[in-house]
Length: 183
Ligand code: HEM
Image (cartoon, rainbow, N blue to C red; front, top):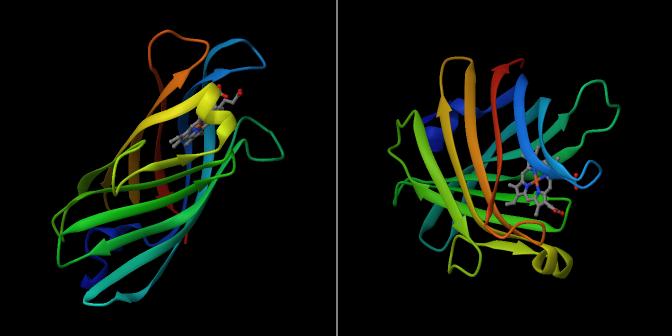
């Protein structure tokens, strides 16, 4: 991929990873569960997007995760990764069909193989939006994502810190996976 996409160039393409692990509170089982998952992800390059003097290049992405032999994915995401070469910043805008949006950001060198993005609720700039039900019952306080890219592979570690009615202390809802290029 051309240099315009900076550290995101290595993520363009189609990906699969079957070694995912999600840790979340399961309402069906009434306890914290570790769920292995298969993930399929597509990232399509676009750009530039011009905001006045700002020129962004990005990836339009769509991701889905399945547990075991479930027909329907138990988690999906759509969104955009963005690279701002002038400020050496990566942004990731995520929509989760649970009533959650995240705009996370962080610094990275143009040739970085690893970078971390963060967002926090009620933070200016990199922030988390959520519906009223979740705000009252399971509110996303903080989000942190570390991405590492390789040759034909990339991986992530994600921590979403939730304030949940079931727990006195903030709960770490975590996800990680390694994906391999399939297209
Ligand atoms: C790979 C990514 C993710 C996967 C696989 C995943 C999976 C899950 C699962 C299995 C549940 C439990 C649903 C239930 O049994 O009631 C859940 C709940 C939830 N997740 Fe995620 N999640 C992911 C990312 C995120 C992110 C990035 C956020 C927020 C920034 C988030 C926020 C929540 C919230 C607020 C709940 C609701 C908890 C509740 O109702 O008690 N998740 N997720």
